[in-house]
Length: 168
Ligand code: ZN
Figure 1 (cartoon, rainbow, N blue to C red):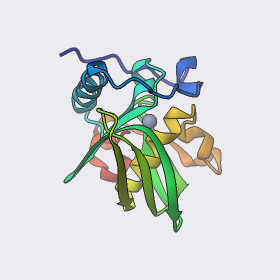
Figure 2: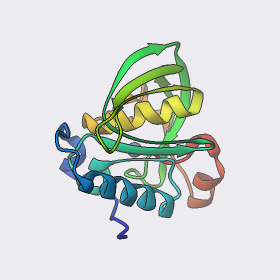
Figure 3: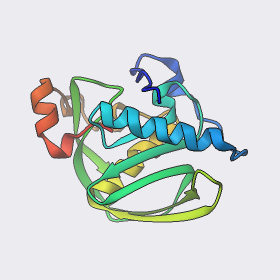
Figure 4: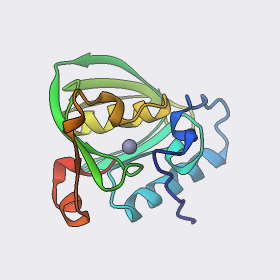
């Protein structure tokens, strides 16, 4: 299975609103498998299709005991507000601090076969899901920084050590 190249922030594909998936043929399962593999190879905890230059509404995320591939996701409930640190596989070498996200979310979408599913998440996993859904709308964490000082350059080692800065 091929590992895809992850594109970075200057690529305009990351700024597009990704297209909804209507046909659930085996290519969607294959795409999800390849996205998981690409994400693992990059030591990330989330990856959205636009990051591998596919402008489609699908992302994968995996953290501790949670693993999800979600198609056409939509946040249907959001509660609370927390500030936190985020990294992005498409913005290597930097992390964003004090990024505001909902503390808990309920996300509705479809699995790779088109079956409706609902995902409940809180804390770090909720942050990952919100970050990935942003990617499908052409939004990067850079757009959510309150101040330019919240963008911090990090060394590769630091990036991997800092759990809450894990790239998504
Ligand atoms: Zn990202």
